[in-house]
Length: 226
Image 1 (cartoon, rainbow, N blue to C red):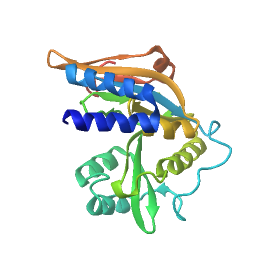
Image 2 (tube, helix red, strand yellow):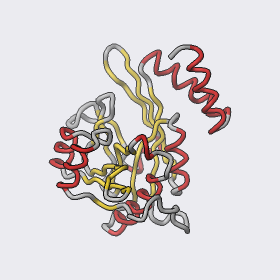
Image 3 (cartoon, one colour):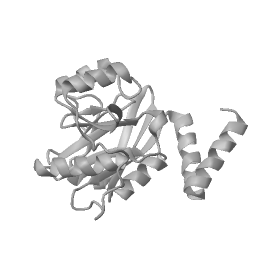
Image 4 (cartoon, one colour):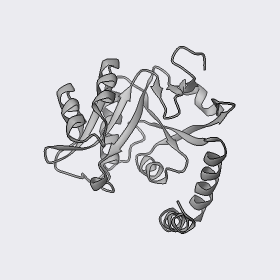
């Protein structure tokens, strides 16, 4: 980005989220530039904390769990959501995908797992067995802003509560202001934070004490200790 693009981007953030968000965004960009660092918020969504009124439906079709056949069809039709390689590996682990629809088309998805989930920097996230971990939420660019995530989050929190889970856990980058706002609308509770950075060729991390009661931890690889 050149200086003008950065200025316009920050001005847009200020308009939508306020000047405190601009300060957060600036610090995050500096941290990322210096050491590929990122700051994350860990949230928990429970069925008990959901708003008393459901989000206005984005379409007439409610979200639901996708069958394996629907997952593969979605990967072939809209790889912007996820590609076939990712889908095959996720299904092989037993992960589940929830889709939101526009007509017959899947336009927004998120994935749920009971297994270690890999972050973009290669580290793995785990959480306690009483919780399901949400990852890779994505909406087709032409359908963003229609609050599919909120409708899907309500459905998912209730669905997993019926299976006996205490809640749905997720991590959101601290400067992903739209996702944080969506989570707040669902009654999400911020339970902790973690920071990752690269030093001497390896990623390192610190997790806040609030993560421990939920079994939330990072690992360098699936078999490593936290």
